[in-house]
Image (cartoon, rainbow, N blue to C red):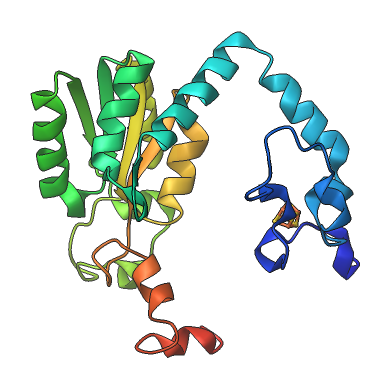
Length: 233
Ligand code: SF4
């Protein structure tokens, strides 16, 4: 694929789509400033198709509520905008906006304590909370072809496979309004997302080294995590 032929917003020097500081009625096109690899130039028809989705009343209302939630996370003060809501608070606020009553936590076994604490907080705020751990099913790892030497607990020991497909199917069956992923492993989360067929959000992703904050390694990639700039095995 030629270098300019695929979108690379992360490499954009202009961010012309943001139209920062412009008046709401300024109709000038950001395309003049946008680079050749801008998706607005490469795939304008896709953006048109996407916008027709917002004409569906339920999609438009969901998108509107999400943006109201975003707005409410900032507090205008004399010295500028200040942020004010943690993601857990946002989860509660947005769920209320959407009229959700029953939430379904899909969590890693390694974050069972966090799942219990999150359940406490959500229940104290009036939600019914379903939770399903990744090991549900109690199926041994050999079932999906793991070799004995690939088991974390050791070759001679039982090890239950992570079962994101069962997790998703149980969450689907439990009739939750919103699924909430909490610390699923990479790949297992991909499967959960593939099989989950209710609205889904993420409260945390798994990062065993950084306390489940993968961006910590990025923020320190000029210093302590400089090794990330080397080729990674
Ligand atoms: S959409 Fe276009 S202008 Fe906006 S960040 Fe991406 S490349 Fe830049």
